[in-house]
Image 1 (cartoon, each protein chain N blue to C red):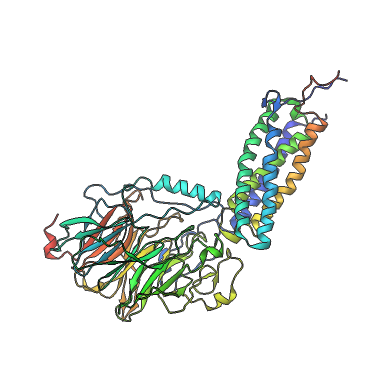
Image 2: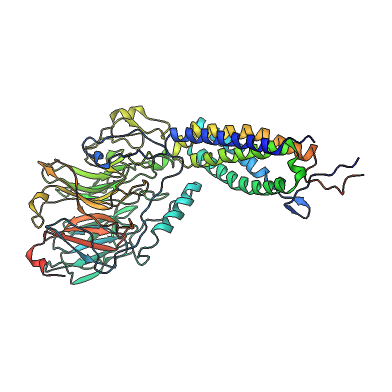
Length: 154
Length: 460
């Protein structure tokens, strides 16, 4: 049975850019939660410094990934027909908003850069990411967004 | 795939986003970040400042005055009955002043050691903004030296301006006892031999006592004063952070005033919990040691007021754990209730973020009589509040050796009509004619304020 895959617009040599970028903000935001917890438990400033770098790098790369993702999303009706694509896009906009606020929270000095609101936001971001990345995987592995049609036996 | 109506979904998503965003922002605002509307900074001048609740920001506050420098003929403003002129111009970041017994004026031209590492993205961004905003001034030439101004006839026009001592390491404090001249570099007190009338120090110098310099060296200015009997030196050693964010190991022996034995160089901590003490001076009536202190930032535009205080032997003034006695700083963990319990409040608040860096007691007769016995304070000016505060020299009246009224503005106009910085006052001193001298490290000028006495009335 023929199935036309929703295609990715932002690509290098037919390799979609968005999935190449997303591991970075995801790993950075998970790392932020871990170093936040480490600081909360130890009050050792080194962990707070790590958190500040991780959340800032996550926000920067998150925005770059979001631009690639948004172009893919807006450029193909087939992508927009996926419910998971909508949930993925809206969910990650919320994630980036919270992470940006969290980045500013982490510019405060010492304890209150993390406890309680920085840590809370870091945790909220990771919980939301569990859901939005699941939706992202649905898009690719179940609906083949960005997967070449040429490779499909028809 | 099942496709639901486009618009309904988009609207739902937008609403969800808006809800989450607004609720998060509300939460952030509840924890601070807003300026207290209409708070009067003057309510924080005097012995009992009003202390609002701490506020913590969402966006880091940063508001530095853009540097424009002084144009030809421009001067700061003084009240009627006083007169101000430039004593010397074209200096390189003059930060502090010392008047030798023969009337020669030492101008300490100094730059920060620049060894503070970038520990967080915040350091990177703030450093970048600061250099963008304040990069418009002069300077950039030879600094970290002491220039000697000789104005033998006291007309406010020095006959000579020459390099007195060079190749110093971020110097700030100077004190002369007999023929021993002490210079406080950021990392050591150096002793030089000085003969009355010398215009240049040839002596390579002898280290007396090492001071906490790098690593980091966040507050690097080491204020210096000799005890009236000349046996002891007192040194201001500022903290290595705003409020402990570089770890408490970095604060060892800092945020304190040291007492150094002049004969041996042996030292002890005289008082502690003083975040960044400068302008060390002995009050002439009581003989007490006084200091001005820069208090902590980023607890809101109206916290924590900077202050001046007499310094009691062995006293603890709170930093970093608390301020004005037992007001706990929520940013410091682990807290130290044992120390907070014994923290004492300072004597006299100068308002928040005015950044006092110089202080001198006035005992001469050149200026009007009301200034006699009181203190002049150089306020370098705020960088982390919407409305600028400081950027002026104020006078605090004293009666019987204790502050006895509201601080009043004496030298203003360092900010122009557009709130750009023409200069910023730092160290203050009184010359042998009784004129008030002000080091302006942005205008690269030393200003001289006189009582408008006849001998200077004809000039300019």
